[in-house]
Amino acid sequence: MSLTEKIAADLMAAMKAKDTLALEALRAAKTAFIIARTERGSGAVLSADEEVKIIHKLVKQRKESAAIYREQKRPDLYEKEENEAEVLEKYLPAKISDEELENVLKVIIARVGAQTLSDMGKVMSVAAKELAGRADGREISAKVKQLLG
View (cartoon, rainbow, N blue to C red):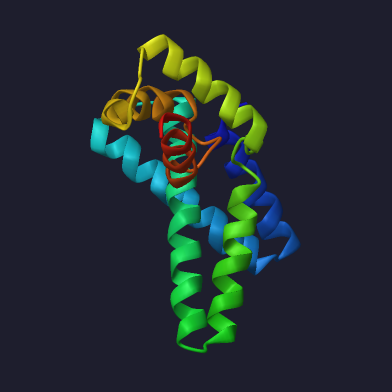
């Protein structure tokens, strides 16, 4: 079952359960999937990676909005955004552990032949593709700097 199908099924379940929080988050995801498919043309199908990227983007947007609401002392809106982010995070692949991230990056560094921080771009381009959805770009960047520095 693809992520699109799983979200559609969970959307129906949220409607039946009258879970407005999950309903709003899942509707946003479904809408984002539809927009991405229509941008590609009729009959387009999203790959699993594209679906994960869309969900990741939605979670990031929710977390950024929550941070803004926290600064503005709007706890009602902050909680709503945080809860929607939690609902959407359930559809993302499991986060990679710090040790596993370091091991994967060491393999990538060896494969690319990176020696110094000036080779960071080579490592990041490969790492971003391999770790998409499993690690945040900032985490990857910080760990690469640590390993090359």
